[in-house]
Amino acid sequence: MINNESAVHLAKSGANQLSWRKLYLSKAKLKAVSRTSALLSGFAMIGIVEITLSDQTNSTLLVLYAVNTTLLVAVHILALMISTCILPNIESATYTMSSIQDSPHVSMNSYIQMAWVLSTAIGILLFLIEIAILCWVKFCPEGIGHCDEPSPAIAGTIIIIPAGIVFIAFTLHFYRKLARHQFDRTNRNLEELENIHSNLQSNII
Image (cartoon, rainbow, N blue to C red; front, side):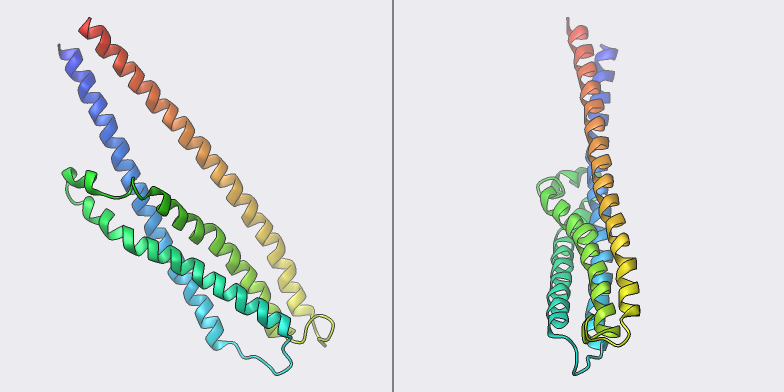
């Protein structure tokens, strides 16, 4: 009888730990999204206000700059909105042990993941592209064929391209490793539950 009660207690303890881990992970992701999106969208807006455009600025550069900046701000604002709407509900669930079931971190996990990807993957990539475009708008506004000194813009672009490739490679590698880790952890949890179930069955018999 003692072994049976111990197994039940262990099963409940493991389930509670898993629930709290998911809650704190969702909370940490939303906080990171809030900080990153607010910072990068703020930089993009300051860039629009502070940049000085000459009359000879190439229209194609202006269109690229406007489109990329709008996408950058829109992506980060969307991620920030998701974080702002969900995070207070998760924060309120961490004050009492009994309110974890009231937290929306499970039912809204897809929105949390979407905000995480928008802010840390797509948003940062758009920000790198924004820097490359700003180099051309600032140092070579007439375009590569009509600029007297395109060297600063070309140098900035040469630096941004490998940085972007490294960022994309790291992002793919990180998410692949993370998915593998989650898969292995789920398998270990299932094995533990199967062992507990087997112990319960043997104790009952």
